[in-house]
Amino acid sequence: MSLEVKNLTKIFPKLLFKKKSFKAVDNLSFQIKEGEVYALLGPNGAGKTTTIKMIAGLVNPTSGNIMLDGHELNNQNKAYKSLSAVLEGTRNVYWRLTPVENLYYFANLRGIPSHKIKDKVEPLLAFLEIDAKKENQSQHLSRGMLQKLALAVALITEPKILLLDEPTLGLDVKSGRIIKDLIIELAKKQNKSVLLTTHQMDLVQNVADRVGIIRDGKIVKEGSLNDLSAVFHNFIYILKVVGDFSIPQKWMDSYGAKKIQNQDNTTELEINCEDNKDVYEILSFLREHNTEIISFSKVVDDLEEVFLRVLEAGSES
Image (cartoon, rainbow, N blue to C red):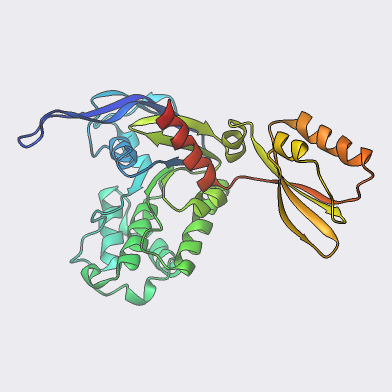
């Protein structure tokens, strides 16, 4: 099932102690295909959680449309049964109920018969490693355990679209890896559509098909990590050659090159190339000087670097 957000806007009205209204989400549009993981990244206050709450039906949009498989979603629409959400910083479960009771309660709310729930509960709790606490009241669980229970509650209803707001927050490394593997399986093997928000860039790099970077309620850049890197037309290469290579300063300056190290009869340089033409010119220069190349490799920007550069570019415009 696909999810499309079209021109979504949320303006919170002026309150008693606030001088003016606040536009949390501003004409936001994006689409998530079936079986795709879409990561919505942005600084705190950018509008990520408000967007998820509007899609989940917890906050009414001021304007705009939310579409599931091309059909508009509204509060009376049964299509909401296709959605499940895990929200950061909120009580996603009832604290006086045990994990098992929470799963039965929320599944029954969606109209799933108890006999069908029974076969799902134990495997789900075991996979998320909360089965040892299944009879404890949820209020006595750790934050990490509560986060995993919230995810179990979201999955017990077998949603076609999963909204995950900081799903690994408060989890240890092992639990975070479980969630990462689960997201991949849900999208690629079960063909679920996943909207993910997180500040953990390594998680996004491992699971996301596309990324939307949001700032002040607007998407400022969107695409795959490679697409976002290419926007800047600026690529770093590491060049390693044999010998103590003496390079004219003019050449170094023209390519923003700098020596990283010079040892073991090798010279290593970091070179800034704007396009493929620069790469060919550098290789031609080295051939003309009979330089033996050991390696010449491109340094791919990690997502954190791309994210910061996009935000910086947005603040300068």
